[in-house]
Length: 433
Image 1 (cartoon, rainbow, N blue to C red):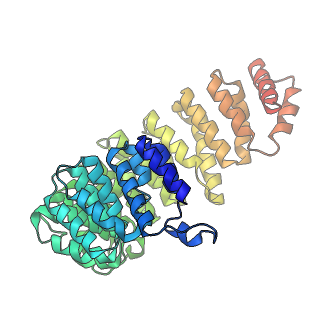
Image 2: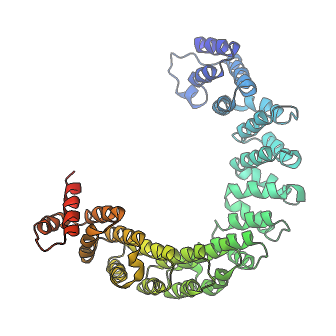
Image 3: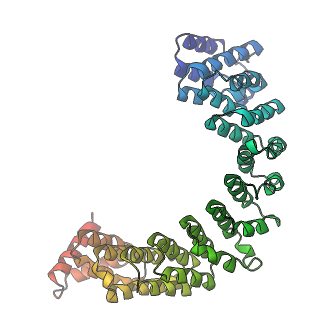
């Protein structure tokens, strides 16, 4: 390995940091050192010190990509990399990007000195990117960092960053400290704690989430709704339907959206009914209507499809497109036939059928559903005056096993209109390409 070190040193003297990185990667460090062949000379302490100094040169003088690559070398060097990394991190005069990488490197060392250094940085650093990386590095250290971070929760100036770091650890040990900040004056602290706690099935958490539904901050309500939406197992116990319904009328659209998603996940006709009532309201904005339509589709019952069919009577073109798309994604066999029939009724009776983009959506949905009863309607679309509609109809027909034979038979039918005859011919030509 002496030759590689010599080449690495020469690259450093030339300031060729990319080549230096490549040479450093060739050295038997970390796991590679253990797996090295017997005839490979192991690196002694002096060699490792030289590698460390070369890596520090790249960190000091390379560009972002060079630093990104060399940061992978430091953990392989072991504990000798800790002290110089800490020195860089604590140097207020050092380049901020270099300090950022030093914090990132330290996150790979589960060492008490590292934890203390990163915690101190959270308290004192003013640069947001630097403190964010310190929080991320601490989260990488897991259990050993939890105690130190918990101590920071008692200090207002560091509570947000400590909560951020704890939230990323996602181990049961963070539940108790985070429960202590769910009523914090800082909105960001409350929302982050609620979001992290929602990942755990612990009996102390659902009451906290229910209380957070009434928080004055929309972001906190949103995280609480998301968390409760993941607990359909507690649907009856917590009366989630009635707890979440008021949030469908929230002033904040993000909260409304998440409430719709949560109710859709319940998979009950009662949930579908609650969603449909809001969908029917003329005061409901179109973006929220789209979310409600999707949520009703997720319910996945025959009744939910009935609600979607009823919604077609008053829906805008944009919402009609979404209803068609949702119906086209139904995959339960019995419901698939029902969805197909709803779309056939729309095609024959609804004025929206006059809009080309609606006909295009119908073709796509029928192709996805694959129900034979839709083939006749798809064949009719081969004569559509709009090119994109015809192309979607051709693509949809390819999903039906016997469509090609039927089109060949139709091609010889003298009673076809010229437009349909031409459409069939184009479809067959496209099919044979």
